[in-house]
Image (tube, rainbow, N blue to C red):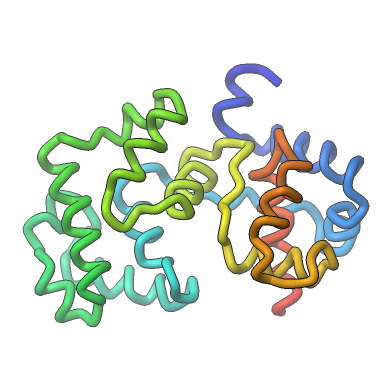
Length: 211
C-alpha cells in the first residue's frame, strides 16, 4: 500500500480492502454477496462533522440529524464562530442536553481561539492527533475513532463500542453477546489493515438487514 493510500481511503482502496477481506473472511464475503460492496460513507473534516458526532452519541442517527438541522436553522450556520456566540443556553432552549450544549460550545470556543487546529491534526501523525482530540470534553475514544474513520478516512480504524457494529457482528454469528466488546476488539484485529473497510461492510449489513 502506498503512503497516500495508507493515509486516506479512496474508492479504489475501498475496493482493494473489500477484496482483501472477502478473500479471508467467509462471513464478510457472504455479506458482500448479499448486499454488494459498502458505500464510501464519509463526512467532511472539520467543525460541523464534530458537532454531528457529538449529537450522534447515545441517540439514533435520525434523531441526531433532526437536532443538527434544528441547530443549523436557529443559528443560521454550523460554524465555530457562529456557535461560539450562540451559547449554551440558546442550545438548551432547542432541547439539547446541558452536556451536549457545553461540549459543542467549548469546541467552538477552542477553534475560534485557535487553540485547536483541525487542519494540523489531519496532516499530522495519528497518535498525536488522537491524543489531542481526546483532550476535548465530550470527545471520547469512540468519537475520535468515528472522526478518523469517517472524516479523515483512515483505512484501519475500528470504532470500539459502536452499537450498530456490535449488533451486526452478533447477528452474523461471530459472538454470543452484543456486549462482548473485548471479543469484538480481538475479532477486529483479524481485519487489519482494513478495519475501516470491515466496519463499512458490517454497517452496510446492519442497515440493509433493518430494511
